[in-house]
Image (cartoon, rainbow, N blue to C red; front, side, top):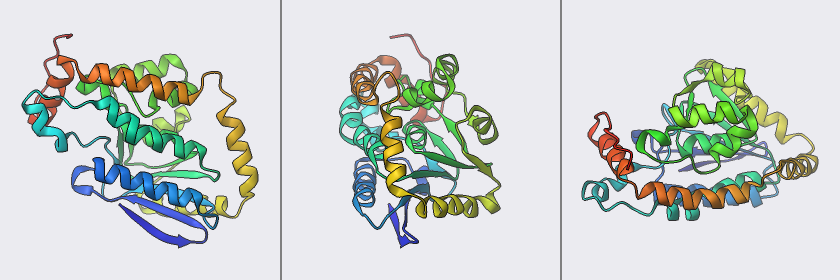
Length: 260
């Protein structure tokens, strides 16, 4: 995980595990949470940017790091991971008293998509896509992904994306209102830096107050949803279909789900 020294009151946090498409394990996940918290509390920082190194933004949880357990049938308690690592990050992003920009340079899948959706703005490269990939390994959307999608695109489209796990390319994300702007790879950094620069010179206190009002303007609270996801993901993580889905993922073969 890397944090670019604050420049022009902007903190850039870069997910830096490109060999695994910036998937998060305990070390990198807690590191991201710590770095984001520090930037959020630093009064000299007026805009935070989260991006990824290499060809991905973030591919979600690093299932490869858990491979040994899955291959022996010892499935980890995924609810604990969601509760202790992902939910605090999502809450921190939404509570940050300054704008947060997701510079989505490549695929944002699973919890990686949820992190991008939690941010205030999403600048997407034309090579990027959002994927609610949970269903592909027999899991449910977590880290607030379904909550954000439902508010942004409505229940029917959110259900479609969650149930199919189909990728949403950048241009489609822009059409649906999931992306703020889309840029060609050669212009991508310039576009997100321009937005971050504008936000960092804006009325920071007014941004904070507006964001706080926005967070309570929706009928069902994010906190309630995040707590519900812990129980749901814990239950989904114990199913035979999730074990099969993850083993198939690790073995690079189609999953054979049995509905159990």
